[in-house]
Length: 249
Image 1: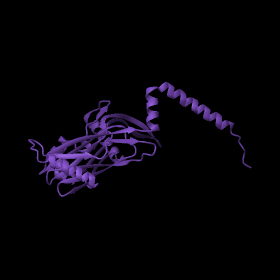
Image 2: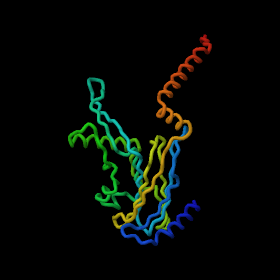
Image 3: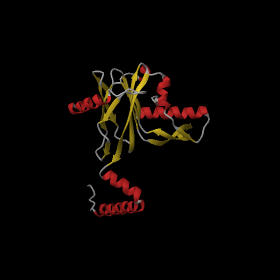
Image 4: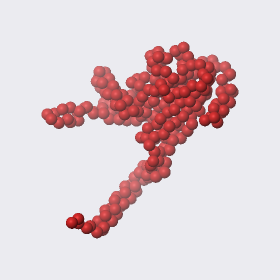
């Protein structure tokens, strides 16, 4: 930790005095630039350490790669529940975490929140098939309620620690079922209700070890992967069938 703070003090000493026409200087250093998913991966903590120019509030937006999801509306037919209408949601981030030093609504007007994408239910999402406005809005609300319930969309105003109105550390907890791809960390410096500084960084989530080998094999040579999987299944069945069975008395 002390090594990180020393590095940031040197970085901020060189960066903060520089003049800025539109934004105040903001230095952010993610602890990791790559997260590897292995067989034992059950989530991880990611730190972002940074420096800012004097007192202010901070907002950190962590965004995962876009994904698709299909929702269905169940209807009751007699004593049974059956699947009714379905809608496919496209383009929304697979993960959206908002970290701040105070509730975002208390430090930024709604127009500023919309401008920087800080409204959990305001994330753009494309719905197929095309629906009328009121029906589309119902599906959109259901989608965001589901994401919040699953823990993929949330706001947290207790995970950023500020030291001396200058340095800060953000502790971000990533779930175990991360999607692979590029993740964006956008940090905003807020003063007097306005965003006066902005920094954008990235890190990558990728499969490692046997998971990466299986994924590559399944996508690069699916016919070979399918044949080997079938052969192994047949071999396992043959071995299990060859084991002597002793009935219980």
